[in-house]
Amino acid sequence: MSDEIYYKTATELRSLLDEKQISSVELIQAVIDRTHAVDSKINAYLDTNENQALAMAQASDERRASGQTRGPLDGIPVSVKDLIVEKGKKARCASRILENFTSPYDATAIINLHNAGAIPWGRVNMDEFAMGSSTETSYFKKTVNPWDLERIPGGSSGGSAACVAAGETILSLGSDTGGSIRQPAALCGVIGMKPTYGTVSRHGLIAFASSLDQIGPFSRCVEDSAMLFDAISGHDPLDSTSYAGEIPKCADALRTKKGPWKLGIPKEYFPDTLDPEIHAAIKSAIESYREKGCEIVEVELPHTDLAIPVYYIIATAEASSNLSRYDGIRYTHRSDETSNALDIYFKSRGEGFGEEVKRRICLGSFVLSSGYYDAYYLRAQKVRNLIRKDFQEAFKKVDALLTPTSPTPAFKFGERSDDPITMYLSDIFTINVNLAGFPALSLPCGLTSGNLPIGLQIIGQPLKEDDLFAIAHSHEEAHDYCKLHPCI
Image (cartoon, rainbow, N blue to C red; front, side, top):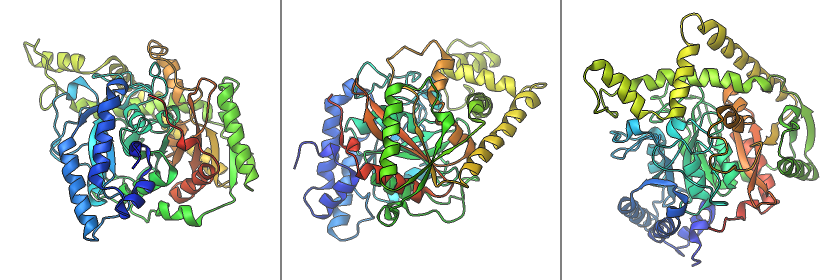
């Protein structure tokens, strides 16, 4: 068996496991060995649970030998972003304030992974409380981009994207509040997918902005992401926003849905400031779809330019509320420099939260304050509804939209750290999708002249993830970008 077993897809590994060419124990050991070899350079993992993973792999091999396999993900390793809780494991959100917090329960997404036989084997780095686009705000370490160790992997799910790209896992779970799955997937050259809001339970996802957050998959091919989405999606009574209707099975759809489709190109997503190499790669991807018989239609999303201000009002308002529970009293960091109750609150939060988190808490508290609620928060919610209607109107004409995922390739560490506005603009093409609650996916569509990945974003209609994956798979079949790997 190739030494590069860690770079095979879950789809390929499923066949090898079923044919007894490899065992799950061998697969897990290969991933562990790869992580030992390269993670000192990548810094993707905060923790790994190697002994437990090997024991779970042994159990998977025994199930397969007795004909009781749990499905296509049985025995496949999955890394987990540090804000999705696992029983008995630390869940720190890459923040000092939760440095010593150990979860007493499993998130629903983790339970669903166990039910599918998948093996959650390590917790990966992220921007603190998912607030960032570069994984530079983590309290613990800076994860790097496997394609260029001097560049950021994207964020906030930078650890998830980097470990998949580097062969340190086969699959990963991340979360997407304003592009936090799709943007790092684009910058690291992997698949990253944000589901329709409500299709994947948020129970056990430590909240940033509750009306925007969604758990989603990372992988190296579209079919793998479809299988992982199938495993973690479904109604959950523990999540009041969970969708109770039928959710399509997406892996099967790749074999039945072949198009051609009617695809929209929103002119607002191709500004003059778009990196020219990214523009060229997206244009080439669009022409590839045209050659496959798809009809390409220009559409308008007129409120696109309002996405950044609307998002940073709504998201920070929800964050200021969600993060108020971390008070230094119960399970969070408590300052040693306290003499009274007020000191505990102020100093513990001041020491425990990083600068970006503090910035967003302050902004969110301001827009929710007396006298400003109507002027900012309420108005932002009204504009959010207009943004959703823009998409609804566009989808009366087309099946899906094609856009860039990121306006630039991965930038170098420190380039935007002192300029929050420029950093926020990293998510300019992804934020609208979260505000609307629709599904979207990023897949590789080329490399820059500097050998940095470029991502194509496909935005789908709500609850039509099967079409979204099928459209992405159509492009993947015609190109080999998903088979390219960084040289570490």
